[in-house]
Image 1 (tube, rainbow, N blue to C red):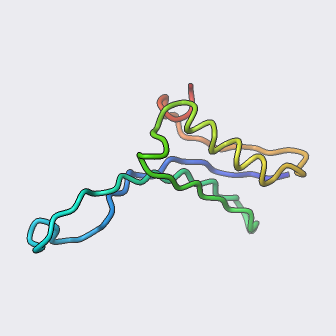
Image 2: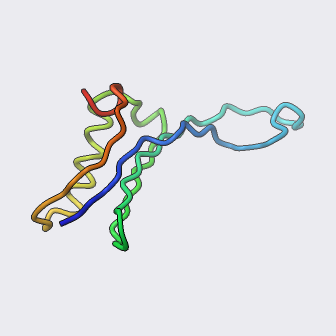
Length: 93
């Protein structure tokens, strides 16, 4: 049995430069998404799905594909319990 917490982390803009506007060069920034599945307790089956906007966005099929990838990783487990926040855009599609 696995107890895991799943959450879509804050959007990350890469490259991360604190003084971005003070830099000599300007470049397009890459929008990166991170869906994390953290096993609760002392387990070691943590999983992070990371992708950028050119691959996929935050649509329902994109989020569902991260759950599919996690479930494929732990496919031999008999029971999996997810702890999710109540964010409609992430979990209710």
